[in-house]
Length: 460
Figure 1: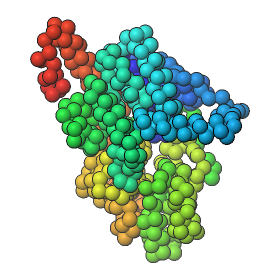
Figure 2: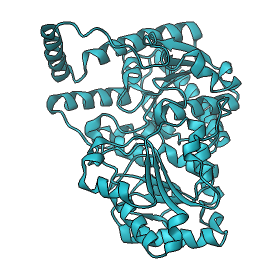
Figure 3: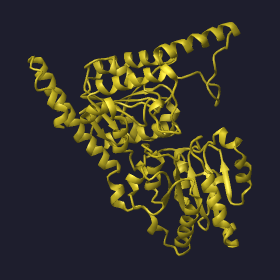
Figure 4: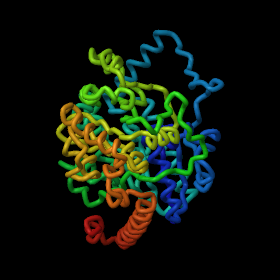
């Protein structure tokens, strides 16, 4: 079976979706499927591909677009700005297009690019199925595929909700008419796709509700994968981040976005460390990753950076290096926004599970975190509950001192269904069924009998 996969982001240096896309491709190869990948040109760069080892050579990679011009070892070179009048007119025209269509001119250009590349790849490669991955708010590949009609059976994959107006608070953003038009695009994608995949049952229910509830019959769950890619890059952590085995390090790996408030955790650590002077030399709360400017403008920021044992490191580390940091840490933290429900599946959770670390889950009770870890997971609480967080740290500290920290890890039976092998084999079975259904539907339509088509999706 040949699968055509689209990847706006591909690779360990392209955010969580890039890592998830790479793991997904690897799982399909391990399941014995032939894989062709349409990837954004920024991902299909020789020096980046070499980091992923020999396995990626088994994937036929087709670049979409041209990589940006680069300075020697530097960022992309921007275009000349032009005169101020031209810039002003382009900005105003772009705003009018966004309000009139819901999408920016650059987005429309990218949709046309993906549409042309998808049409060519389907005609040339003749895949059995097309699996369309986007990236966050970048749903250009799904929009392009929705405009191709019944060119091939296809799955629209959702990493997160789309568009931003359908995110839960406090992530949600609504732009008057533009958001309504984007939501119409979302409905068009879901209705046009043969199947729609989500990393969790909770996100499936979140997106397929209201007027889209009848589409739940085509919804499937393909979780983020717990597994390690055979990377070729050096996985040693930077010297500034080497963690000794005699240190109780509580690690948060990843960006601190504006809705993710770290103050409850910092206060809890301060309370925990103040109980015993001996802890000051061994306990450390370490944040590694980008920090939103709103956090730095918060009055609590200055106090947090001065707190003994609390360290913020914005140095960028490679994916392999981040795994090494997780293995050296005593406890790993997932920090979510505090809201009534969280439909997000944090991709870093799979890496924490891979490294077999106790997880301090700061998330709502109604969340994918709770679904994965279990409703009775003892180390989960709200991000603002500093008293509860401090008690959890006390318990984990006692286990660490006694050499029993492994007792606090998530049971393997909860992790096994997210393994590379389990996800790859389930995808293979799903794709086989999907292709058979699509071919059966085409045969029925060719005979002109549409009465039996209605039962195909609900029968799955």
